[in-house]
Structures are given as structure tokens and as C-alpha cells.
Amino acid sequence: MATISAVQVEFLEFPAVVTSPASGKTYFLGGAGERGLTIEGKFIKFTGIGVYLEDKAVPSLAAKWKGKTSEELVHTLHFYRDIISGPFEKLIRGSKILPLAGAEYSKKVMENCVAHMKSVGTYGDAEAAAIEKFAEAFKNVNFAPGASVFYRQSPDGILGVSCLF
Image (tube, rainbow, N blue to C red; front, side, top):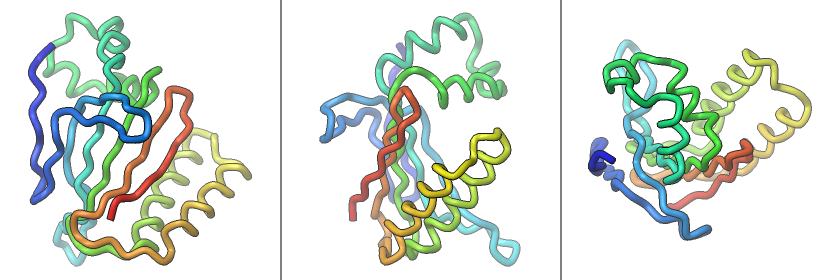
């Protein structure tokens, strides 16, 4: 396997390997970057995001994608879909670059999630209730730069959320 390096996004460092304190599982960095919004014509970075994959992601993905070059993979939407839907855990760390109110954060996350679920036909009453619980959890939170939200996605699609301030 290729050597995995840490990635720096603004002042945030996403280590090459992390261990979950909750499960003791080890995850490797699949990629990192920034998220933001264009405000008055200027892109403002609000969040650095690192996506970590469970070790068994490699054999799972290799079975289908072996022999492809990195150039081919980087331009193949189905490869990314296989990462997202693969039968292995993902750990996503979203760390704030700028101060951000929890209500603003949850509003944007909710908009994106609802739009996606509606586009694939999976948005129903249970999802609407979960979205409301998500909004409630963050309504009185204020994120300082460096504060992080962690999302753990299980192989069967169950999402867990925790914060580090």
C-alpha cells in the first residue's frame, strides 16, 4: 500500500492514521479539504474536513478497482460512490476554521442532507425526525476555530455524531 501522509488544511492537521477512542478501531486518511460558502462573490472557508476509512476498505475497493490508475479513479464518480457506500466504517472529522454558530452549521448540513435524500428518494418521516434532532443538538452550540464534529458511518449506514470543543 502507498504511504499515507497527514494533510494540512489551513491551521488544521489531519493525521494519516487515527484510532477511535470509542471503538479502538484504526482508520486511515482517505482525503481532506475545505468547505465553505461564496459570500458577496468571495469564497469563505468555514470548515476543514478529513475522511478516514477503516482498514478493510482497501481490499473491498481493490476487488473492483484494481488496475485503474489514480488519474482514472480521481475522475470516476462511481469510485467515490463505492467509498461512500462501501461495507466498511468511515470516520469524518469536520473542524471549524472560523467561528460558527451551531444553528448556522446545522442549517447548512440539514439543507445538504435533505436535498440529497430527496434526490435519491429516501427522505421520509423518520429522516425528517432525525434532521430535527440534529438541529436541536446544535442550536445552542458555538464553534470556535479548531472545534470538531465527528461523524461515524457504520457499514450499514447508521450515523453517529460527537463533538470536541
